[in-house]
Image (cartoon, rainbow, N blue to C red; front, side, top):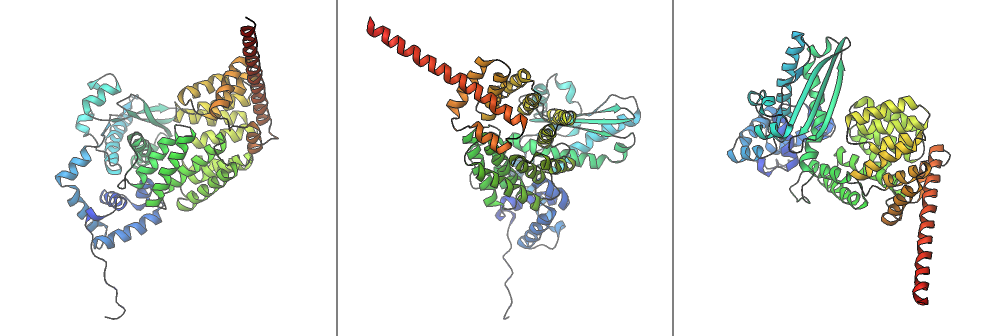
Length: 493
């Protein structure tokens, strides 16, 4: 018939893109559009659009029919084997330190609900609760328990009285290393958790998801064409943690590759924003271009996922990079309000509060950040100590950060200036020598002009760098003079 349009050919699940197949998996698990959006870091509206296209591609009428197709496809032996080859999660029974029967009942319920929720949300296999409920008797260490259960990750928790209410603590541990990858603490009134278990589980499992995917993707090689956008994005996040210029560039390539597959992936835009701020802080490339990239990434994240915290965080970082520390506090507070477990936002907010002279509030925010990331934020704590003119304490923290990331220019500069102002000129010279040799582009004048020359702490930072630099130049000059004298003495003999 004239004007009629041929229906698109029906696709098999094998022919779907990896992104659409991932979406279909979550539909089959029964997740709502909001829940799928949280898992994939996209807005519910984007989820609806993808699902409409997916239903058309599969030539089915509704989500139920699409889910039935996926379940039949996923149940094939080769597909089951692929799923079971992934790193497994074991949820251990939650502890209850109270003799209150209600508390013990809720702790037991949380154990089962968390196991069920992880199975719904994640692409990782989850060890059956009939096995994991005896997990604590299988060994004294996380490594022993993980080996006995054949699980890479352990989820552990406790419900304890706190005042007139309760505190729920949950942690995610990598059983191969024993390291804590993520933790969360939430306080509830005496009645609240007992009627709200499902929402509690939803919120915490969603927050833990990125830690799981980051841990499993950290060591992967350069991805091929079949890698999914979120895999590329998490690889970029892992590279960014190395804190050097080459890794920053490599991470940017991963994020751009992710966006080539999924242009509306907020996680990749967020990663580009983090890289841009790191470039400003460590003076990797053009400052103005990095600030512009930071601004674009922040606005893009807020546009794609207005209900998420990441875009507001990047806007706050952009304002800090423009030396507008007071204005940055608003979007950073919004980021914390949207995600109380967002450790980076707590740390950035602490910096703005400290610059404004709200020292106690700043310390509290930084303590929150350190609690959420116990092995992170050493540099942030060092900055806070430096701001308070506690230079020896700042030096010790900066040197610990350098131990973890030897090529981190800002941490090295902070160690040098703290040592100089703290009266340890020799150590200042040692640090500035490494900074000037390994990172010759780092310029304290550019740092001051970026973050605010009228701010006392920025001026002190610059003065300490200058003291360390003069000491280094003097030592180099004396060494050159000694070399010349030795040459003359050899000629004389």
